Each structure stands twice: as structure tokens, then as C-alpha cells.
Length: 540
Image (cartoon, rainbow, N blue to C red):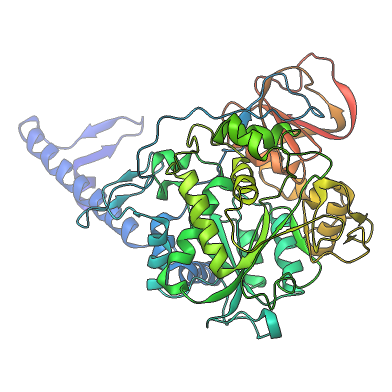
């Protein structure tokens, strides 16, 4: 400091006066530069060496995350915010109109879907850009599972669940497991699935969940003792990353049961859609005592496969017209709910996998791949008798009800669903087809929501605070169409979706769908009309 004072001084009019002679001016400038460099370097070193202490809450949260997924979570956290494989361009589509069955355009797929074996001497670099892999890429999804088991259990909570007669979650042979995909699953759907299951079963539950997993969903899976296998699409090759989750899940399930840690661990397996399923009784009772069996359940029964554009289209596009002619007269069997003994389930998964990986000469993968085609495969396997010890249930007497069939007796007010015979269904699938039923279930299980305030979730969502909204109106009908996404549980679900897409400027939520708009705002002139239950929003 004294050196600096001796070099420069501010005069009364704010100008710098020099106290050195012109002869020594050059040397003094050199000294000034050196001194400033030393001072700045010291300040920078001090700033980098000292970091603010973490709060106890932050330390606890970080410790829990590390405990849950350990090395895996450290390598792959915060890479994939959302999978938009369900978001398809849909010009001129308005609320209330049906979704088109559009195909994806994909490049030709190589013989193996996974990347080649990794170089053990390289490293993975993570940044906000593309996934640059120079090291330790997983050859198969089972490598992900094996890595986690190598680090210890990946159960999201402490001790295993308590034992319970036929539904105990046992680590020994003969246990039961419920397995499914929960990609971008809304917390209300997730808690309905987990909480209703835990009322009736202590079976193991294994869910594949894409990262990052929201804080609310982490809370839910911990609360209900759910085993989570986190993943991101960049774990797979580029071609597989384009697959819809409903197709990709079969490969992931097969790899799970192939892992040596799971060999001979389970006797009964429930494969189920997570987003729209709930439980009213023990789901394993229907298969308890069967030595070898695979139970399937009809969907819509008033149409055959050929008479349904969706199901007929999936088979025709993936297997050809001849295969559709062969099986098209049969009933539609839902691929979202199946339960079986492990011997049949593992064979079934390998058949599904071979087809979606393009290894079957009879199937046109990946060209035909899109949302729903797995049900086409499922129906071909069922109706060409490629599944051992198969049982097919009619909806009238089934213990599992697919509500799309519109056959069940639904008490929406009390949240109770029975089949036509008057028996309580153990498993209810597609409960979102009855909005009042879904509302009842959410009110029963979504413990963090104040349902007396219809905009509670909107007001609690940080993304939604960026939008102005109007209720019971479609502000953008027929204009600015951009994208749509179904399976949404409320208008707040559209906020984060729109905010994640740079081109999205506004949206309308209606009957579980987000109609995203591009180029529209609150001043857009169009034929806005009243639409009860709709919420339209635009950036403030």
C-alpha cells in the first residue's frame, strides 16, 4: 500500500500527479505492474480457496443423493431434463381433436443398438453440450445395473420392507416384483401408483426413472420404499435414444432380469404402465399358486384388431398386411398390464427384445417404431401362440381392468372400480380415462397439494410464474400450432414443457393435453372461444 501511495496521488481536481521524475518513470511503471499483479493474484487465490459452508439441509440432501446412486449418480446427474419423444409436431390440431398416429423418421439402425465396448483408459466429460464419450460408456443396460450393484443397493430408502405372506419382498428365490418405466412421470401419477400398491403389497418395486429425478419424485420413492434405477437416454446409442419409452422399456427389463444379482431372485413378475395404473388389492393373488403362467388382459372388446386404426396400424406397419390378416380378427390385448411366472416372463422379454432390436426377419424395426408399437408386438406374440401357458382374461370378469374398454363399473366419487361381475379389481389401468376418478385418486394420495385451491399447483410452480393465464377459454384456437403432448395432469404441467422449448410462446391445456403454440401472445388476434376446463397461457 505504501508503495502504491508513493507512486500515484490524486490531486484536488481529480487528476493524477506524478511524484517521480521522467527518468525513473519507466522503472516505476514496471514496479506498479508487478505489485498489482501480486495483489490481484493473492485476491483470486483467496476467493477460490474459500467456499461458503453448506447448510445442514444441503449437506443432508447431498448425502442422501450420494447414498442412493453413488458413483452412477455422480457420473450422470443433470444431463437429461426431459424426453420429448412423445411430443410430435401436429399442425392445425386443436383441443378436443384426436391425436394423429404420426411415424418418426429415423436413420437405418446398425446391427447392435449399444455403443461398442468402451476404452478403459478414457474419461467421460460432462457439460451442457452434446454427450462426449471418451470413456466408460455402457455396452448394455445391464452394465448400468451391474455398476450400481457393485456400489451397493440402489433402493431409495433404508431397510427393506416388512415381510408379508405371499407378497413379501424377499431377496431370496420366490419373491415378487413389480417393474415398470416411469419416465417424466408426474408426481401425482407416481404417488397414486406407489401409495395404492403399498396399501396391498410389500413386493419389490423396480422403476426405471430418467434423470434428473425431481425432488418430489425422490421424496415419493423414498417414502414408499421403491427401488429406482436412474438412467438417461445418452446411456444408449444414438438410434436407441429415438425410441419411445414404451418400446425401450422391454430391453431394460430384459437386462434387469439378466443381471446376475437378480438371477433366481423372483418367482412372479408384474410388468405394468406406471403413469395411469393404481391398485385396489394384492396384484399377485391372481397368479399365486400357479407353477407356470402368463396372464394377459383384453382391452377394448367391441372392436377387433383390424377394426382399430391404432392397433391394426401398428401390426401392419411392423409386420405387414399378411400378419394383420392372420391375427386381425382377434381381440385387442393390452401390453401395459401383464403378470407371469419368471420362467415365462423372461422368455417373453427376450422375444420382445429381439423384435424391437431389429433381429426378427418378420418385423420392420426400426422403421415402424413409434409410441404404441409394443402393443402390436404383444398382440402378435399372443395370437400366434408364442407365449407359454397363456391366459387371456375378459374384461367382464377380469381382476385387472383396462378402463379404455368402458366395461367396468366406475364409482368416480369414491374412487372404486369393479368389473361387471361386481368384483373389486385388483389392478385398475387407464384411470385417467375418467377425469373425475383421477381427481378423486389425486385427492386421496397427493398429500402435498391443497385441493381447495384449484390453482395451487400453478402458483407453486416456478415456471408458471412466467405466464399469464386465462381459465375456461381457448385463446389460440386454429393459430400458432406448434406441438402437443398428452398424459398431462394439469395446466401447470404445460409450464415447464413450454419453458423448455425455445420456440414455445404460449399454450392451451385441455383434457390432459398441452397444445403448445409458437408466435402467439396475449395480443394475438384470433377467434378465441369459451372452452370449459381449458386454461390458456402466454409469457408475461
